[in-house]
Amino acid sequence: MVRAHRIRIAAASVAACSLFAGTALGVNAGISAGNGKTLSPNGGSATVDVGDTVTWTWVGPDTDHIMESGPGQAESWDSDPGAGTNPNHGVGDTFAHQFTHAGAFNYHCRVHPDKMFGVITVNATGLPASSFTVSPASGAIVGQPVSFDGSGSSDPDGVLMSYQWDLDGDGSFETTGVTPTHVYATAGTVNVKLRVTDNLANQSTSARDYAIADPPPPVVPPAGDPPPVVLGPPPPPQVAKLVLSGAARQRAPHRRGVTGMATCDLACTVTASGSITIPGAKKVALATLTKTLAAGVRTPVVLTVPKASRAKIQKLLAAGKVLRATLVLRTADGGTATRAFSLIR
Image 1 (cartoon, rainbow, N blue to C red):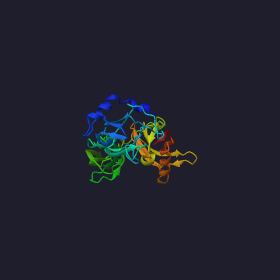
Image 2 (image 1 turned 120 degrees about the horizontal axis):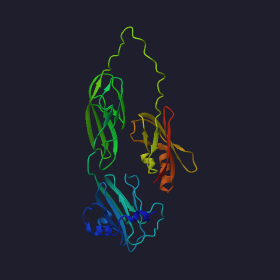
Image 3 (image 1 turned 90 degrees about the horizontal axis):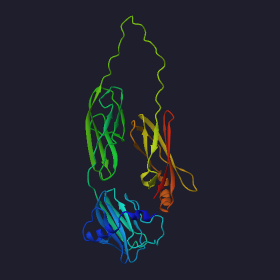
Image 4 (image 1 turned 180 degrees about the vertical axis):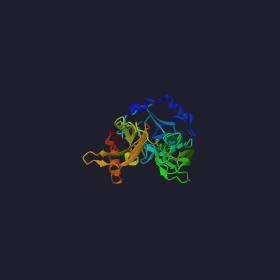
């Protein structure tokens, strides 16, 4: 399992170790492990940007080292997951980790934590970008539901943590969520805004004017016209097709929750529920939620782990156990979608 990670970068990472000695390391930074239980250059510390990769190389003569991150960090890595404390490495073996979050991340050698440790500092490279669409796009009439979709927003160096909306144009961001729906009671033009916030508390706001019109007056047929012809019963309502997807293996559910990606070919509202199966114990029920899906748009659905069960789940994962989680989506018309996930450390 470890060897698969070591194929990425070989001799080039060794050259990187000497090239960046005494300076901040850049893209694909290299760190040497060995030479009397030491890390070099810079004592095993490096500074990179979000999206960069750091590669550790076992240079010998002693190579029984395991590089693992400290607990509870946004970035997690382990060069020998599930291995003992005396791995059999060869000179020239490598392990690489790409960083997708900004911040300072501690790590150490699991075998020699008091002698081999360092900090990887990851710099942010940009602000988030706010963007949204509206349906119907050309405007709506009073009483008609209007769907907003902020999933086109992005963050080049992190994760978007919140979506806040000012749907009535009063300057207050009172609505949250990626795809809210709103019904306007009066006609006029509303300046709608979306403000997104990333994991570094950086924010970006986008806005657009949206027109709301009064409904047209009813058509009154002339007196004496015959009654309208009844052609038959209306067609049956469309049944929404619901799909639940997502990464089959997910890390650290006790901190981030279990995430699925929901797609509905029609605009629909789903109720999400789920559970985690713990060996030798009853299932742990995840928090339920209700979410409105825009037609054809993949929308994240995150179910959190109850606080009372987080420590137990974290302990099982740290012990190398692989847990199973199941998410279930249901629509009001009886449609369902189910997906199972493997939970790892």
